[in-house]
Length: 426
Length: 112
Image (cartoon, rainbow over all chains, first blue to last red; front, side):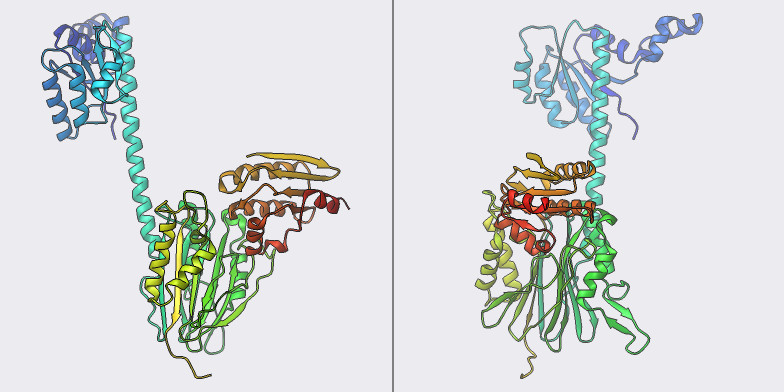
C-alpha cells in the first residue's frame, strides 16, 4: 500500500492557506523558486525544498466545505491522513468541524489551530468529545507545521498498516479454526447399540483440545481426547500433528500391518501411549500433552484404555454407581519417566462413559473458585435420565452458569458415550 | 515471582512464596531453575508450602528441570498441600518426586 500523504487544511484566511501550501507542498507553491533553482543552480532554498516532505493538500475555506471534502474522500476511498483546522471561522467553528469530521472519519488525525487564548485545549476536547486532538497556537512556524504533518501522517499510516495486519491475522485464525474443526468428528458414528455426544468450546478461536472417534475395524472403535499445553496457534498446530498421527488408516500409532491375515493388528492402548511418548518428546515442540485413549469393542462393550495425566474418564453405571478409570501414566513427552498402565472395563446396557478436559473442572468463577470434579459428576448424575445429548448440554450450561458467563480460561471439551442395547445375557 | 532461596550444605532450598503456581509465573520460574541448575545446584528442595494451586504448565517446568539434572542430582518437593498433591497424583508425578512434609525433613534426607 502506498503511503497516504493527503492532508486537508481548513482556514478562512487565504494568506494562511498559502503559508500551508508553501510549507507542505513546496513544489506546487513555489513555481518561481523552482524556476529560479533551474536557472541559477542548486540554491540552498531549492535544496531545502527537495529534501522536504511533499503532501497532497486540499485547501478549504470553511467548516461546511471541509466536512464535505472529508465525506467525498471517504466515498472515493481516498481518506485524508490529517486535518489542520482553524478554530475561528465564519460558519461553524473549528471544534464543531472537527467533531463532525470525526463522525464521518474517526481515523483522521486532527490539529486545531488557534490564535485565540479563549480556547484552551480542554474547551476543545469538551466540544469534540475526544482527547486525541492536537492543538497548535498561531502564529505557527514552518517547523511546527512540518513536524505535525510528518508525525500525524506517519501515525495514520502505521495505524492503518497495523489494522490490516490485524485483519489478516484474524482471517488466518478463522481459517485455522475451520481446519481444526475439520479434525473433530464430523458425524456421529453410526454404531448399533452405542450412542455418542460431545461439546467443544475453544477459549480462543483455536485451541489445544482435540478429540475424535475412529473405526479401527468391524468391531472396534478408537476414542481419544487430547489436551496440548498452552493455547492459541502453537497448541493448535500440535493438535493437528497429533490428530494426524492418530488416524487409523494413515497414522502409524493405532494400527500396524502384519504379514498374516487380517494383515493388521490393533495396538493396545498402553503401547499407543508409549509410541506417542516416543513420537512427541518434550523437546520436539516445547509442548507436552495429556490424553485419554480407549478402544471400544462394540460387540462386547469391552473398553481397554490408558491415559497420560489426562482427567480420568468416568463411568456411570445404569445402577447409578460411578467410578473413575484410573489407569494410565504421566504426561506424554517425558520419555519413560513413569511406566504407562492399561485398564479394562465393560460398558453394559444403560452405562455411560465420559471423557473431558480439565477446562471443565478447572473453570473458575469470579471468586477464583473452581467448578471442580464433584460438581461435574453431580451434574452428570442429575441429568442421568435425559438423553446423552441433553446431558452434555446441561453440564456445559451448568459450568457456564457457575461462572455466570465468565469467559472460559481454557478449552472445554466433553465427549460421552452410552450403551443403548445389545447386551448379551451373561 | 516471589521466591526465597537458601543453601544448606550442598542442598539448595527454593521456597515459592506465590499462592498460585500457574502459567503466569511459569516462565520466570523456568529461568530461575535453569540458572540455579547451570550454577551447579543439583540437590534441590522445592518448598511449596505457600502454594494453594499449581497448574500443569508449572508442573511441566519442575519436570523439565528434573530432566536438566538427569541422574546427577535430585529435586524433591516439600510442604505440598492437598491441591498440589492431587495434581501430582493425577499426573503420576507422585512416583517421580519424593515428597516431604516440610523443607527441613527434605534437607535432612538429601544431605545424607
